[in-house]
Structure formats: structure tokens, C-alpha cells
Image 1 (cartoon, rainbow, N blue to C red):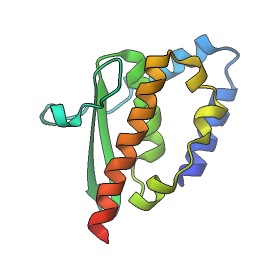
Image 2: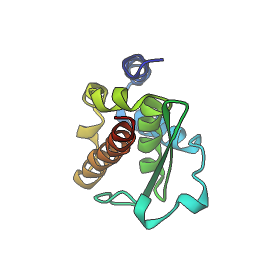
Image 3: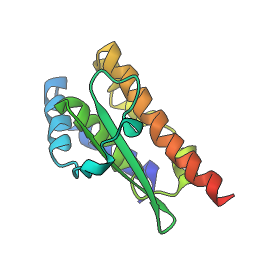
Image 4: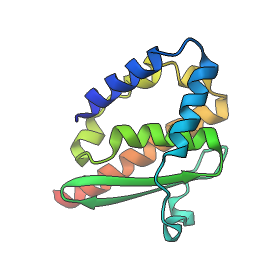
Length: 140
């Protein structure tokens, strides 16, 4: 599935909810299904700077695609990172780097987060794309 197709699927899913309380609950549920990051990857270097809570993000390049794993000590943040990984996992670096992030605005996520969580969201996306850039540069 392409990044755009996954984002469209997420937009459709969020459209089924009547209000933001239901959407928050859905995001929290997504976090519960996030595959647990290996403890050996819960390192300072994998912590995302700019997040209100602790968020670890690790990436590996396998079979021409990036596999991300993550964790957070906050349930809502864990759900947000799960949403991002759903979009970017198992994609090629070039696709991650070129991806538009329109779905975040379309589902209203950023406007329904506190300023510090919104900054954390931006920091998560930057780190995801930095990993993609690093893997892409190794290919060149």
C-alpha cells in the first residue's frame, strides 16, 4: 500500500467518529497495538527531542524498506506515534521523504493537540524523515 493510500484510509476511519473524544480513544487504542520497541533500542540517541513525553524511535533498513519501531511513556503520544508508523512503516526512503502530511490536517489532529504535543508531533515526523534521509544517502 502506498503512503497516500494509507493516509486516505486513516482519513476515512477518522471520518466515522462524531467527536474528538471518540477520536482520542481511537488514537489511544492504536497505541495499545503498537509493537513494543526492543529495550536495547530505548537509548538516549533514539529519544525524540521536543516531545512533552518520552518517545523512542528506532529504524532499520531491510529489503529496500524502512522498518520503524517506537514507544512512549504517554498513552496518547504512543497512539500518535503508532498512527505515524502505520503511514511510514515498510516504505522506501524516497517515498518517506517525498510524503505529504496532509492527512494530519485533514483529520484535525494538530489543532486538537496541546502546543507541546503538536511540537512533539512535528519532532516525530522530522525524526522519521531524518532516518529516511540517512538510509537514502547510503544508497546514493
